[in-house]
Length: 398
Image 1 (cartoon, rainbow, N blue to C red):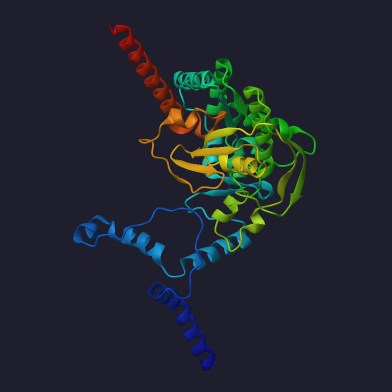
Image 2: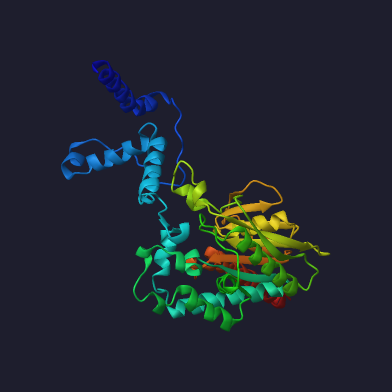
């Protein structure tokens, strides 16, 4: 018995010492955590921090991020909580809620779902009018324009929200989307309202899911249906024989594509795969066109599933994407790069293209283009002023 207790004590001591050994030597290698968190800086040690009570919490935060085998420890704790209590971590950088039927939700979207729109009507009207003005300026240059509103998972599938997300009076509130879209329609903005389309598609008998259980973005099937609508609308708007795609069915399997389990990975279990749920993929019929367009996309994180589908099916000749209007992605293959707006000649960037497509998630409304619309209109105004000055100078010349 004494030998057993001695061995147990030694093993227990080794387990306790292992994180310190890993911190000092880097062995064994840690298992990295998913997600983004703010890096804690080493706190300054001094009497001021001691007396004002900030030294200990600051030091705790700093050491917690650097403790050896942190990934192993965090994943093990999260896995035990999920298996034993069906609970997900509440202190992750991106908080994830576990809803009914295994549906995961990002908390910020649930909070937005339960709040009334806070934007003033005058602001919404002005942004809608600016979007229409840009649409008209692009049309004068022979460039088609589409605004795509990407829906929130909480707005499309509220029936799976966790019980704690139920808020009294929720059905009576009006969101920024509901308040904004009426101005877009009144102004004649070329709109692909995926929020409205998703509600229609969802209501069809036997309709496939448009969001994956483990994803915060539309799944591949939902994005494909929106891409098909974009291709159809661009063909009509340009008057050119562009490729189109028809979604003729859906296939369900366990293959994860793109971001269809991004929330499942963020909760940092030993395996987020069980949270992914069944995956719905489109069965497509692509109809080639005589002209492959050159398209500029401006969008948020929803744009990637959309453009990845369109890339794979060759729906354009060239595609650039301004991600949040601060980073540029290219297709065909080229490395992405920060967008240097000081050096960016926007008129040169758009002229000669077939179309500009702005995608914006309804969570971000009314931030259409994240500054792109404003800067484009300024560029057009500057161009107009330069042409007017040239004309005046020519008229004044003897």
